[in-house]
Length: 237
Image (cartoon, rainbow, N blue to C red):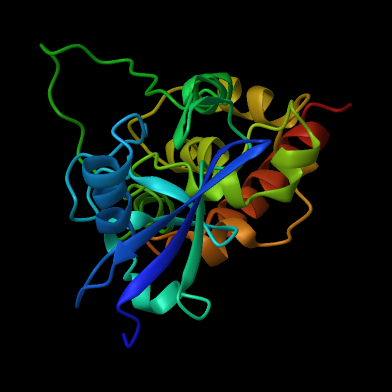
């Protein structure tokens, strides 16, 4: 990084962008920059972070129009000259400044039946699982999702369709559909085949391209499309 001062534009709301001069340091992250602004220039600036090491996902923001974990994004990698624009995640209501309301994201997780449907009790024996089976491999592929909503912010289908469940919720549904311990197959297929379900996906792939954990929601959604189609014809519709 050669610049001594960074020009940091922060999108406060739809009609307001505030620009700050921020000192440049080696190994500086976007989150470091936002924190400097809050601590030294504008104490009213609202944003979220927790772990600072890419484990919680709470620091996700739009950086030059791209959704990113700001704690794992070095400012030197995203500067345009010596400038950067930082805003709240797309496709979610803004509470204040860079903090968004995550309720719609989690509501769609529930709507997609993204919760475990168990049949056993704590008194039952733990069922053995074949970790090498094809379904277990599919289930394991998405379990590292940490609900950061980067994929949701990246998705143009979400932007244009308020009912669309979104890539994270649908990936979770696919994970549970392939989990031998889950008893909710019918409920999951019904949930993801209805209004706002997997067939609304246009397979543009932004969810997979921008996932910080290198997950592949687009392939999970494709799997749901196949299974819901099979289920449709099996029921004789």
